[in-house]
Length: 504
Ligand SMILES: Cc1ncc(COP(=O)(O)O)c(C=O)c1O
Image 1 (tube, rainbow, N blue to C red):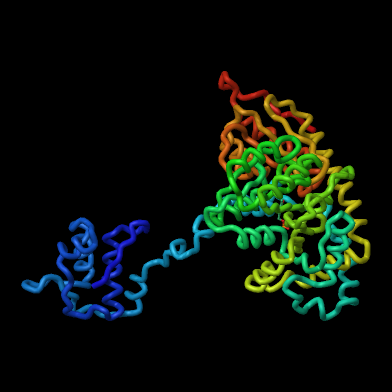
Image 2 (tube, rainbow, N blue to C red; image 1 turned 135 degrees about the vertical axis):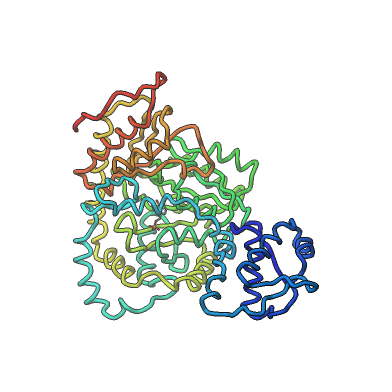
């Protein structure tokens, strides 16, 4: 009789023994009259206490599965009848997490899921997401592109595309790239289902469990999650008001050899920083010196409020060390799930295979929509308007925050991107703060998960200004301030002055 015990399972050991014996009986592997090992023998065989076997046998006896017979020991009961009902009762639940592969065994951080869910909550003002709200999302643009796409491309909109994406779209992206100084031909470009898929593919391609990745600290939580799910050691290089500190990066590179450096140098998520030219040069020099690929994840460079003349890292790279990720999620809409990668041809070819074994190709209709937006010249027009709308929302947000003067609270004002990075007073209880936000129906992104390693020193939140309606921003900020008040105690254990009545 073969029984295996799993001490990691929630089910107690006696229950596991009992269930397995029942299964052996129900499956016919044990028949009426078969002799079971004695309690002592089974306990020794399984390396457990005899009382555990005793408990299992006792329950099996009382449920009529086994009998004790003088002289023969414990035997399978003869009158036991197999019915569909009792078969079902003894099939144990499938231990799903145990059979999952390592990246998915842990449930991970639920921050992105929570942020997406908060969007639909009635009466909640959400600053937690990272996308455009109804007042700025380009519905009219799509309305005018759609009929053109239908008449120009017809049935092609419904057919599959090549693995790497529509050639015409890849060509158009390469042309756009050239305008920004990026030298990439069509063989060095692929279309992905969003930047998230691009990060995930690149991680699968380069990272084995235990490999090290350097990221900014803080850095985009969605990338940190992917890296950790693949078993990478994620090391955070501190960010100051200019972005990743390249002096510290150099010190770390002297000591460690990461497999990859990942960053968003252009209006970083979450801090909004834009890496200055000198730091870009230094970062590339270090990458060349230590032969480390750099992933430039760039959803936000087109969302600038004043043109910035610092080139993209990929445009500065003349040796194919930088793999560039672009996306239409921020400049158009996130639901299209369309992004792209510029990288060395060897990399793109391997990624093409990954596309084949996952989802074959990115959504055809959206590829044509974006192609039409690029070719018709409507995208630059939309972007000019969108930047102004986003800036107006940022201004309202800043004005709302500036109406409050809370000791220890500070924030940056980025020159582009979607977010403010708010440092909260150190005497604030972070847990109470997020509870209070929930009660007050305001959603913000907690800052902690943006750090690859836990930091207890400060409490940060990331607040997005593109999603909430412009008319809701003041009220939303009032709720955040109220939550701060509810979660903050002074040294005399007093609540800080009340912002309840401040009407903006
Ligand atoms: C830095 C960064 N990378 C990637 C993504 C994911 O973008 P996509 O919607 O294209 O998958 C985001 C979205 O917030 C982001 O901020």
